[in-house]
Length: 193
Image 1 (cartoon, rainbow, N blue to C red):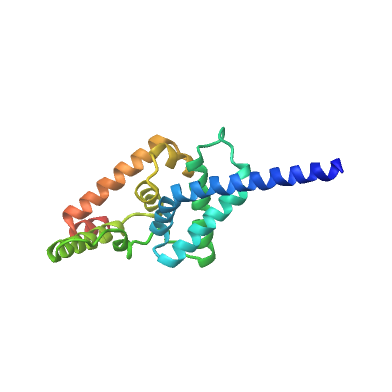
Image 2: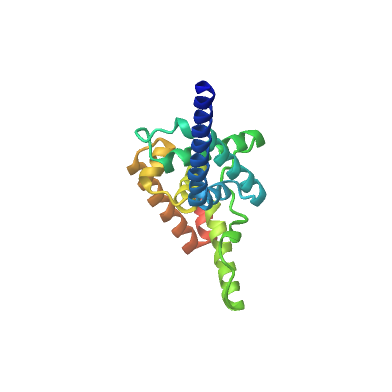
């Protein structure tokens, strides 16, 4: 009789633990979903595929949550390392080498406003899209982590396994390159090639 009661208590504790885990993971999902989605979308430029891959990120995180160690990395860094791996796996499957396409980045920018504002935003977006095409894979990945995932340089460094100062230098040079491209337009492209 006592054995049955003990099993019931253990089962109850397991189900309570499961309930807490679901509630905690629900909080994690709500907190990080948009940032993970933005990162994935910046990298693959496909709405539905980005949603699917974001779901895979959270699925893998939920399955592997017990392996997370606070001593090894911040949770955010751990989660975005998973996201990075999911995206890299996606590209390996597609056998593509372009990691960051921005043809559809316009969807991330609000189109609310007057018709004049909408046209101005569209023109600016087109210029930005053209400028971003000059970036190499590494630069695009760092830009996606910085502006899509909203990570700090130290977190990007941990995800990419490079130094924080290296991230800063790459971002600085990338932003400088983009600024030159936006200021000079086609003239810049001719000098680069």
